[in-house]
Amino acid sequence: MNGLILKDLYNLKGSTAFIVLLTVLFALLFSWEMPEGMVLVSAAMAASLVSGSFSYDHSYGWNAHAVSIGIPRRMIVTSKFEIGFLFVFAGVLFGLLLALIFQITMGMSIDAHQMLSASAMSLGVGMVASSVICAVNYYVNPQRAQLVSTF
Image (cartoon, rainbow, N blue to C red; front, side):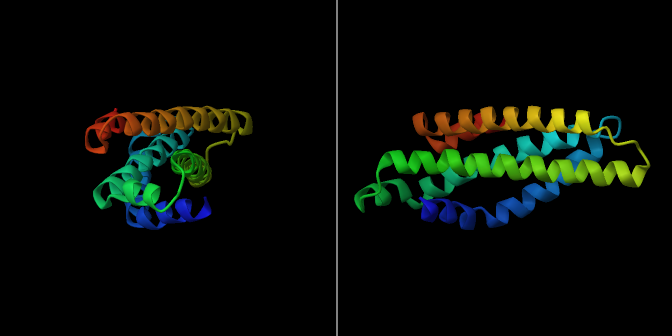
């Protein structure tokens, strides 16, 4: 199981750097009035990385290879949901850190209750988005399923 997760992390290393830069850009553009929005933006951007994992697997024929060497389909599916949770959780932490840095540099007051509630909401929204992306990618071709991750 850990090997499947590491495979996805290695495959998405370049995409992750791009998503981090894009998250910072979106967060700075759209979160001036409400810095807690940075947490939601980063969770949503991190959830979109899961579709990249499916695209890599589809383009290299990984699923057919994994099943032929004896990796159960259930383990492959579970690893995709776990990688989605890891990315969303990391996105929430990154967004929380980004929002705190933004509030400190702008001299805004930090409301811990509001930040924690925004983090919990963002984690929930990100997990739902990641789960929908995983489910759609298993029922539809990954190239077609990327349309779902853009919405």
